Image 1 (tube, rainbow, N blue to C red):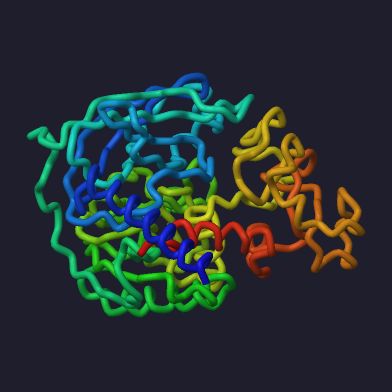
Image 2: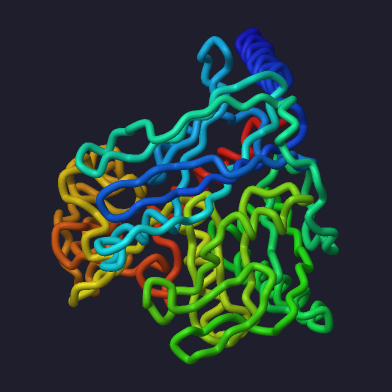
Length: 427
């Protein structure tokens, strides 16, 4: 009994200190930092474009330091005395573009939005990029942020209707998912609400989301477009839509993205969120998932339900693609073999100890043969990260490899860990 009482006192003290740390350094509001990432295959630079005050920080107030070590970039906020107050790993469409043939010939710029709690005092923002050879971090950009700066914009860019589809508690204690309407006209908003409900149902039909439904809030934001649908450049189809989404990103027919990340973030300014999912009003197959950036999927394709789960794996849990291409592709050189990939479900064996090695039964051969005998086995299967050789995945079949499968145990563990990060000890 004494041990239980001591543990309760200790837990209360830890939570009190955590809460006090947040309240000492941050307000309940959110800061949106709009950056420009520019460069080519060989070099990159980051510029500050603008900053915006937004009403509510929807993330955890107890887990402010991101220790997952996921993402191609990291942002950190430091106090005046260089105490780390907040950190956040993320990815960008710009990073992916740097592996295309176009990036070898020319330079381009991409807008990226970061969100942090709104600071009470001056802080230093630092942005890092991952060293491809070592897996470590290099500083890329830094600037001082003064919360009293009159250049921090406080306007209201829109006043879209927000629907609460599922509510399980305070945003600071739940995973908040916001569905954004893209390519829906004013007369199509009933369809959008139905599509959003259908997408939420699809997500919660898959484990571990089914078992963790109580840990989520779901919102549907009725952002109105002038035209219905989206751009399909290779078909010469162009639509005037609120987020300016497009297929044929990087000349890949199915790659449906929103090239300007800041457009999505601005649309969602009034809603607390952890994950933004852009539902595009089209029956054409496609989607995208950018870790701690945004997720995109078509509304009416036959594979839409599976796509939302797959893309959530990317954007929410930092999962990598487990499939491989036999022929060279835009992402063929995406992963170097010198460093261990940061994604929790793929490995180059450089540092397999920190992946799923402890989940493999001692009687399972490693590497594991890709035969039906091992279909329901956690092992080490060659072919992942777009490469048929030298990269490995944990299961013969997984929704991160093929849309007709489910999350394998390794991916389920990664998703659960991320849900815990946003919810456990949040009270």
